[in-house]
Image (cartoon, rainbow, N blue to C red):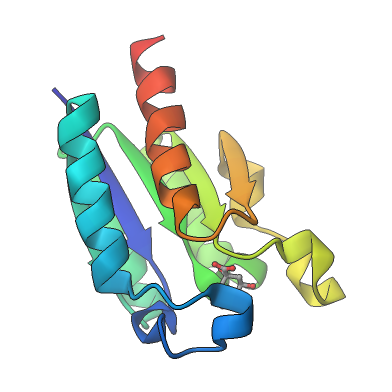
Length: 145
Ligand code: DQA
C-alpha cells in the first residue's frame, strides 16, 4: 500500500479560528480526520503532522525517506522563504505536492514566490480543506501511474 506524509507548517495549528475569511472554519483536526477517512477510501496509508518550526519540518521530511512514498506539504509562510525546506525535499527525492488552502496567487505579491514549487510535482491551492483530498488523489495517481 502506498504511504503518504501530509506535512503542515507554521500557524496551521490555528485553523478554524485563524482568519476564517481566508482559511475557512475547518480545524486542522477536522482536516486530519477527513484525510484519514479518504485514505481508507482510496487505499493509501497516511501520516499527518504539523509543526511551527522549520527545523522540525526538515527533520520530518528526512524521516519520510524509506517510510513514505510521497509528501504533501502545506509549508505555510515557509513556502515563500525556506531554501532549507526546498533542499530537504530535493535531498530525499520523494515526489512532493505543494498545497495551500488559499489561492496564494490572488493574494499579496510576497505569496507568489514559492521555493517549494521548484522541487514539487505540482501545486494545489485555493480549494480550502478539499485541497488536501485533491492532493491525496493526485499523489495516488502519480504513484500508481
Ligand atoms: C497558506 C498560504 C501561505 O501564504 C500562508 O503563509 C499560510 C497558509 C495556505 O494554506 O493558504 O500560512 O499556506
